[in-house]
Length: 429
Image: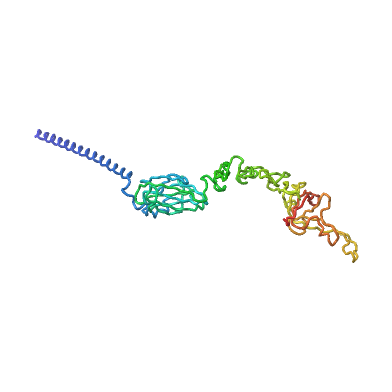
């Protein structure tokens, strides 16, 4: 009995060991097959991603029709492949995964441009511009300026279909021509942009507004022996130290031409009080008074330069007399006669105007007599009005009117006066 029991135990143990071996073999086979299946699936997935479909689908990734998405294709579905040079044919080849190819071109306002595209496959042709900014380092556009299609058979050229259109450029900037074939991925194409009117050189500028910050539209310096000189034109150039485009470019002074051609300018200092200004001279020799000064000219001397003088109002002189005392000033104001002093002779009927009268003249910021005005004098003490009691107001040194007075401001113990050097009637200009 004991022998049989031991034998059965050994037999059972052997069966269990055999079953475990079979199970291990099955599990090993399953794991190997799973690995192989995974490799096959992975390989299938890679080949599916990298291979183009048999034909280009009618819809884009957003399920919009090919030509229906043309107004937003510039910023989302177009691959910018290069820049067009005016008048030069550019050849291209588009294939999966690119939906559209874009070629940028710089156009100037006033140009009339003719575009032509020859292609092997019918497709969308668009013109966008000017760019309104950048996105991820590439120009950003709004809706298409021109919507066209390469669909009709051309008479000449390397392609089978073509598209042509003409544009009058209204605004300078970066534009982009876009092409993409219908319902197939690959197509060869050729593209050209030719200027037909208002043509300019690629780097030509007409004004400083077309140049970047820190640049000015200046003469390129090229000269010709014979006219017309087509190679001489203005280009955007970096402004060197001291050069300028207008007064806003000068931290001190003002922007003056360097020669009679006005092709270049430089920052120069203002003329200070007492220095010369304006006059008839070449532009590179003209001087301008600093702010707060006026250029005063000697009367009756044509084309002669003037002198920079302090320009103030009557109110400013009365408010701060110590600041201007003894200085030569320029004051625009209204001149009027003051109260007259007359003799008191009893005039006979035959000479009713026998009394002699005199009155000083005063300068004020507003018309009419102002007791707070400034008394006008001259070095001889003869400035004012004089005559008989009937005509003294008609015999004044200066007509009662809006007048520019140039002279020395004198601060007296009880009053303020201007010792007049010259006058200018502003109402007669």
